Length: 93
Length: 486
Image 1: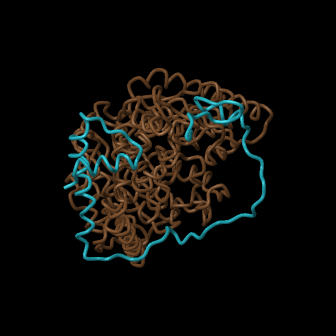
Image 2 (image 1 turned 60 degrees about the vertical axis):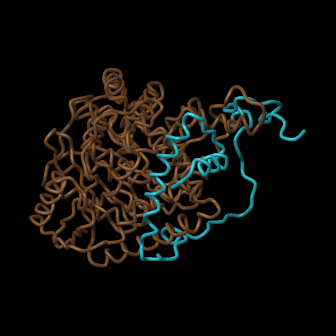
Image 3 (image 1 turned 90 degrees about the vertical axis):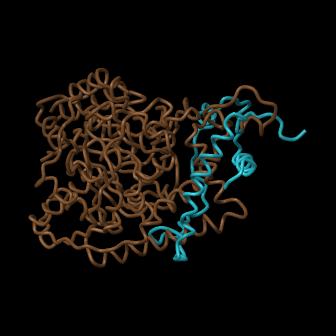
């Protein structure tokens, strides 16, 4: 059984608020979902090491400067910007 | 059989039986008329479409030859980035997001003067099996609008099945191309992981996501796959198409082809669907293919493995939505952390939040080994089980979905019941394999049934060849009563 407290803890890690009136319903749903995920622990099979799909290896390129996007175009999608930068409230005093 | 719409329209354009502008306008008018019932499009782009159409008409007028996909009206799922055209993932959090670059697939098609009619509906961030988690409401099934089009690429399937687009590109993370194609009685191809570039596809679960075509015929799916499967340096997992164009071998004889059936794929599948699969095996035998039966016990864990890993990746991928750089931003907040939390809590829908929470849970300290690590190891087991299966057969035949399209509103009630509908589609994504869904019958209510052909890595040519032969022999395609009649 997953507890309300666990759900609240996970919500903090996920940067999500859970409203008082949603917590019971969400805990019940999450309990079902986690119980379902738990069925893999009934597998007698320990499995095989798996690190990636289709044996891909890291693709690297030379560290060269290439043209990027126009700053104004990038900032056009932001709700708040100032002087060519994204605008947020003070993080540190 | 379902003839190739692309080949037919290409011929009409090249022979000047219709101008590209007239053809495009016909589709725009059909969208105006039928989209209210289907809710397939969330953004319609008539100006972009007509501008591309004029370019094609000018080429034809000058006597230049045009490519197969040139001037063909099509659509893109709303998680495929389009420079200057809103791309919302059908989420409030991206409701006004306008990309400043094109996804590679759209870049390829745009260069070939594809006519983009608009962007189509989907489950929010591709998380869902009915299209109903979309912030715009779900797309409807063109065979019966009381039923869903399926998900997550429900809008593409509804538009193509409803004849208000010739073809479309969707994305498939756990079945999101094949399942709606099956529900809408059309063809959906999920290519091998890496065969089509994911650059510009808004990520859900990066080790599963793959872009592919949704069409009304196998030949069209082959043509679109050949066009978009290119190596792309902007996607580090891109490999492009490894073999010759699949169109070259599409209509080859399949005498002696070994078609495998794993009984695990038929567990819990509705009788009408089982019967349709049985009839398909009869047709394959009459075409000279050999049916081989085998066990695939590893499939038992496919669904929880998929949900654990996909949600883990989603919880990381969706961490970027913080209201700062793009998309929705909460209005009232007291500090940055509060702003991010309020933005995410108001901007994401319930299903997305549940998947982020599950993903965070399985990756959190104390649970990582029991869930994430164990699921990764079982992913390895499933990959090996398929490898082993393909030593005894060329392609695997399975249902696409255990049932037909559910009624509107039905999928939202029970989370696990909804997840179970993905049981036949997720194994392909877990193992990175190609799979194509082809219509193979109708249930008592007249809703389409789909079957799936699964191939080994980069085995698109074989599955499409087997799919074309079946389509040609079985003639199971029925056009829905919407949109443009050709």
